[in-house]
Image (cartoon, rainbow, N blue to C red):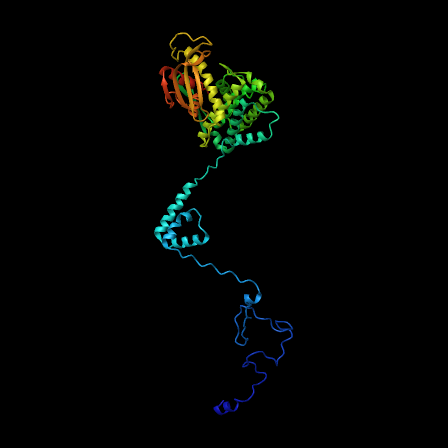
Length: 449
C-alpha cells in the first residue's frame, strides 16, 4: 500500500467481519450456542487469572467504613510505658516474682533486650526465686495412709476395729506391699544381705528380694499358727525357730523364690489383721512361740511390724528406693518393746558368760530394786526407760541409776536389728562403762535372721 492509499483509507470504517483490531465486547456477533460457557456465554475468568488486553479492568468495590456501621469504635492500643532506667531497675525484683502489671512487664522485658547489666541482674533474681520454691518429691508421704484412715475412722468408727497393738503391723505390711508393687520383675532377684548378731559377732546371709519376702512369710506363720490359721510352711523344720523355718522354706523350693511369693505373704498379713480384729483385745495375751522364747501376741505383732520395716529397708536399699521410718507413734511402740526385752537379753548374755556379772555374783531377787541404766531415746518415737541391770525381775530405780545412754530412735532400732555395731552406735554415754557396753551389746543380741 502506497502512502496515498493509506491516507485515503484512514477515514473508512473497518470491515464488520474483522474483529482483530477491536477492543471491548463484540455486540454485533452473537455468542456461540454450544460454547465452553454454555448458552449464556463464556464463563467468568478466575479472580487470580491474569487479565488479557481485551478485558475491561476490574475495580473493587469500596469498603464500608466502621463509622457507617454504627458499631463502637475499637479501643486504641495503650501507649507503651516510658520509664527511666532507675525505675526499670527497681522493678526487676517484682518482675522476677511475676508481680508486675502487664504494662510494666512489657517495659521491663523491652529494657532487658537493650541493657546487659539489667539482664544479668534479672537472670540472677529469677534463679533466686527458683530456690524459694524447691521441687517437691513425687513419693507419697509415708504417713498419708495413716492420716486418711484416721480421718475416715473419726467420721465413721469401724464396726470391728483393729486392736491398737496390731495397727503397726497393718501399716508396715501395707507400706512394704506398696514398695513391692512399684518394682519390676528383674528387681525381685536383686541381691539382699540379711544381717544380725550372734554372740558378739555380726553375721549375714545373702538372698534376694523374693527370698526376703519368703522369710517374712514363714516367720509370720508362727503367729498364723497361734491364731489357728494355715501354716505357709509345708515341711516340718528341725526346730520351730525363725531361722530354721526360713531355711526349710528355701530348701523345699525347687527354684529360687520369685514375685509369686508376694500374693501369699500379703494374703497372710490380711488374715492376721482380720483375725486379731475379730478375736478382740483379749487375744493379745496368747503366747507365740519362737522356739527359744515366747512373746504374747500383742508383743509378737509389734515384733513382726518391726521386722517388716527393717527388711523393707533392706529391700529398698537393694533396689534404690526411698523408704521412710514408721510413724512416731508406731516407732515409739517398737522402741518400747525393745527396751522391755533388754533385761531378759542381759540375763541371757550374763548366763552365757558374755556380760559382766556386776557388783555381785548373784542376780538380784525379783521385786528388789537394783542397779539401773537410763535409756534416753531422742527424735522420732523418743522417750526414757529405766533398764534393770542385775535381774529381769528387779525393780528399776532412779536411786540406783549407774549409767545413762542417749540414742536416736532410728539408730536404736538399727542397733536392735543388727544393722549397726554396738561399738559404732553414736550414743551419748555417762556413767558405768561396763554397764553401758552390756546394754548396747544386749540390744544388738535382740536381732536375728
